[in-house]
Amino acid sequence: MSEAPKVPAAPPADDESQGVSRRSFLHTAGCAAVAAALTGCGHLSTEEFLQRNFRELDKKELGEIIARLEKEYTAKFHKKVTVAATPPMPGVVFGYALDLSRCIGCRRCVYACVKENNQSRIPQIQWIRVLQMDKEEGVSLLHADPYYDPPLVPQEGHFYMPVQCHQCKNPPCVKVCPVKATWQEPDGITVVDYNWCIGCRYCMAACPYGARRFNWGEPHLPPEEINPVTEYLGNRPRPKGVVEKCTFCIQRTRKGRYPACVEICPTGSRKFGNLLDPGSEIRYVIENKRVFLFKEELNTQPKFFYFYGV
Amino acid sequence: MPRDEARRWGLSGGLRLVMAAALTLLAPALRAADPPGAAPVAGAKEAPGDVDSNQIQVPPPPFSEGIFPCTQCHDGKTVKLNTTRRKLVDMHDDIVLNHGPNRWCLDCHSAEHRDQLHLVDGELIDFSKSYLLCGQCHGDKLRDWKVGVHGKRTGYWNGQKQYLLCVNCHNPHSPHFKPLKPLPPPVPPDQIMAPEGGAP
Ligand code: SF4
Ligand code: SF4
Image (cartoon, rainbow over all chains, first blue to last red; front, side, top):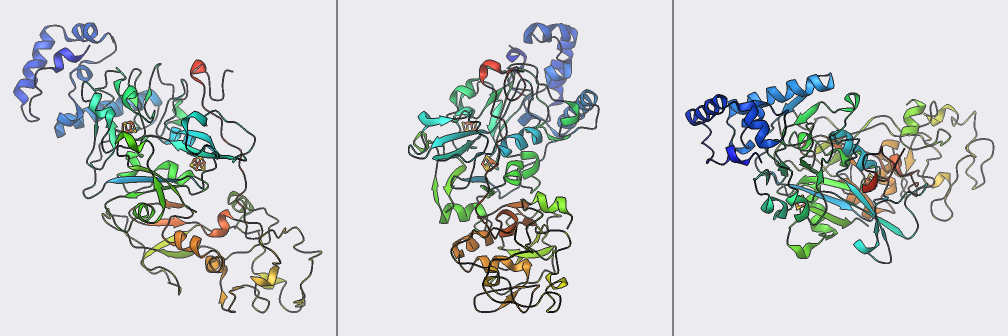
């Protein structure tokens, strides 16, 4: 759909002339009409339609886009919404570990994530899925139930396995994206440029962990519930028709904070830190505990580890 | 600490466990990339047996309002010292001791220094250091807790962190982690337009 005008080899970030000429050409051709015709979305603004891939933007363009988004969100949610593009920290690759011997399946993490990351309430989108499994069967997707709802957890004979994006080092989702709208950042977080995603959902088919979610409908997020501190590649409000997923709370972790799911978990099952730091708790877990990788045989090389703390 | 605070930490108002107020603990060094503003706070005291270097502020431990110091009553006059192992009546009778066989109060609480706890060797410790007491039997947990792997940390993965004490999650008199009501399950795909918890 919107591929046609994006195809000409993207100009280097500082090549104004080419950008301008394309811009003026489209203006002459009646840009809005062309945009509407090509994308099938009448409400895309000229700027939005002409925006390039996040990784090709220069400082000035990025600044303009962020200003535009902040204005749009602030008007929509009736409160000041900020959009940052915090760069990755040098010398940091994030890792996550979840203690299967402690998780009780209370789903506090699911809802803390929804709130922190501005997931749509209706239609419901949740990045974390907690699977109830049989102790007798071990980790088996044939015996996994995400819809368990007893009065109290944990239930006798069961254990609980929350699943979210594993931030694979070898991510199949990135490989299949036909427009490079999703990629892995230097700190190991796989992100989505929601303004570039065309909604083909190839990545969802490719992800072996079911970690990606699609905005089938217009996301509904009550203004009083929005988290106004957002990141371009993270928790900013998403439009209909794009894919989203866990980013290890990029808007928090790139500023040194723990992800929201780590902080809410009442059992302390969730561990997070810098894999490159030998003194980090995540390294302690990997070096001293029984650790396993989910679907290790697929060679996705997750940076999300399950372990047994006891 | 106000009562609702005590409740928030999951211990009943009737629980007569008394803890010292805000404390400062220690944890292992782990700074690879300290961002500005996340520098560890200086000035915390180290206790023998602790890991050094990064100071960690602990949220106030759970207590019942007005219960501490214990010497308000246990001053040797109002309540006379009685070291006989017995079932308590009148006071503290709401405490259910369900923590290993044959325990009783003075195994952990000091008889002579009521506002403190004591280790098996008789060493007195403040309530703020109760993890040392727990660690006498649960040494593996204490070791993991010190490095931030048992228990919960909040704050900065590359800077200042907050810890919970053992007793913030485990009632020391009945330490098994209490079951919780789970939050609602996800909406099944066929009801995806419905609010959480299924069709209205
Ligand atoms: S909040 Fe913690 S204990 Fe509860 S489901 Fe999530 S990981 Fe498990
Ligand atoms: S878990 Fe799925 S979405 Fe996340 S990086 Fe791996 S393949 Fe991609």
